[in-house]
Image (cartoon, rainbow, N blue to C red):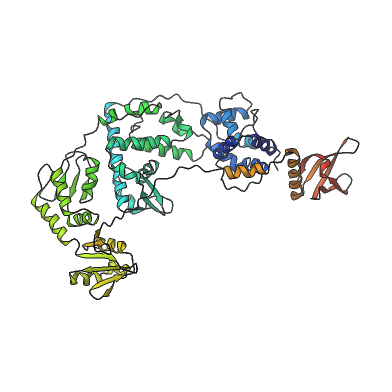
Length: 561
């Protein structure tokens, strides 16, 4: 048992519940840890693995202060934080287990003066374009995830299939990280699903979209690179946590995200819109928006069944247009293509033929081309030819006025997992109606989901989830348990604990025993047992077995194992 655990246990017991909870949180202690008392807590906090986790969490200034305390240099600037971490006692002393690990920790390089370099006009323009591209690509990812959740692999990264879909403007997992930071998407059961908050974000223009993601990124920055409400110069981020072996990779990832958001130019310069935010001021978008094209609310509809937006289309219009088209390009002048499948998909999702035509007439600068009007009408006429609805037992009924279409569905190999079987002039399945409707639509059959009364329903595939709850882990049960085991005589409890540890290890100890005349006597014993309030052991000097009342033992010191 570590002799250094005793003073730490006393200090833990003297802390308020708030101070104790802060220490447990800083040291990343699990709330369900099986500590029985403060001595367990002290010993666990002084284990090398626990100390290493604490050292990795230290900022550059805190690490320098702790190194100074170990080297007996006066550096109390961050002593309060180190005491809160349990790495210093109240008098600024470093426990030996901590000092041993600090002595072997890497040296801390001297600070290098760093001032942000203002970005030139051309560099700022490229940073603004990068921010615009990133937010647009993030919108594309969320729209895709809203239609159908994106697949994740066991590590939590996007699957290879999804990575190919979102290969631009950079690593798709960077976009996924931004989505999670802004609480727009969350991983659930190896799927990336959009949250309720994503709908409002997707309908917003660029400025509020960028502001929301940027503020979420700022709030998620680690302690080491924060400076008040802002952050330190990005070139110094890699030095922020000198004793965390994983930090260089994490710092590089954060720097990449900052570049994607246009907060840092690719050459490391600082755009104008970043300066106030870095210094802890309010976020502004005017200088950023001045470098970007204005969003438009009209487009050109062409006879070849395409639509061209002469600039970035307002997101709400873009989202609705994408629901009825195939999006071909996402440049500042976007293009869209209408197909029978895309119109059918919109009808399945709840659009009507008249609603589609009215929307297109409203946003078109060139009227409504006849080929497009004909495509919508023709697709709407076929829509509903196959009707999919629930039966009384929870299964599914598939019906159609076109008997040949039902025959094709019955023998379609792609639909075998649906278990469709003939039942007179209809098909039945034990699979749910919505799943069957999705499968038929994917197989390009004009399927419509209906209720038991025959009324059409929208087959919404999105599995939107609630935003994450930010409730912090509660240490109240653990603290209550530690307090309940806190006896009035801490010295006696610690002595009893030391004796039990010596017996378990069959250790040789030097015990100081109070004699009846008030004097003390030191005995060297090989501890062999304890019970009934007595310690048993062989006296090394006299080579006899002794039994000593625990209440007469004043102190115990380990000599050897």
